[in-house]
Image (cartoon, rainbow, N blue to C red; front, side):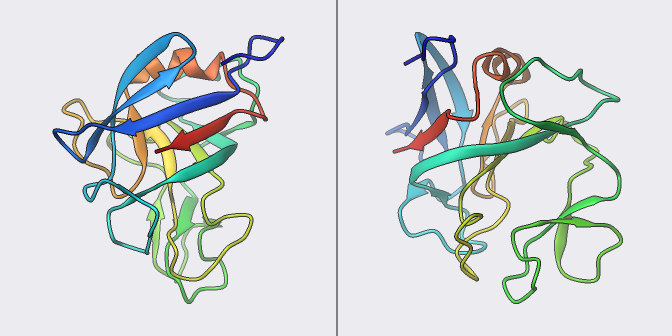
Length: 178
């Protein structure tokens, strides 16, 4: 569904019945394949469980790798990814589920990756605005591996599909995972 300014209001994610770590995305009149968490979709998300959380999530902002992809015209803020960016995934850390500057002593993942998964990486409001320790961190909407390997709980799509979506999303677009 699009708003008057041609921005998508909702992007719907559904799990495939034949493979819990694969899904389909419905965006306007388009349909894309996606990779999901290795444990499929569930309403009971916990840190490290490999579950893609079910729910309706705002897309807060994103990152892009300027050395690999261009800044796309989009209705959300895109930050240029840096080698010093990390994401804290340690539930007991005060910066849990937050962007951190590297080097960082707490457990974290690097946002600057050798693979292409975070060439575009959008931050979802999953356990972010109302953060609770242990209920999941680093749930992103990002680029899939070529073989659509399962994620750790994120939603991942082909680069070409992400490029199209970036042109059609805005601050009010919701990712609805069912």
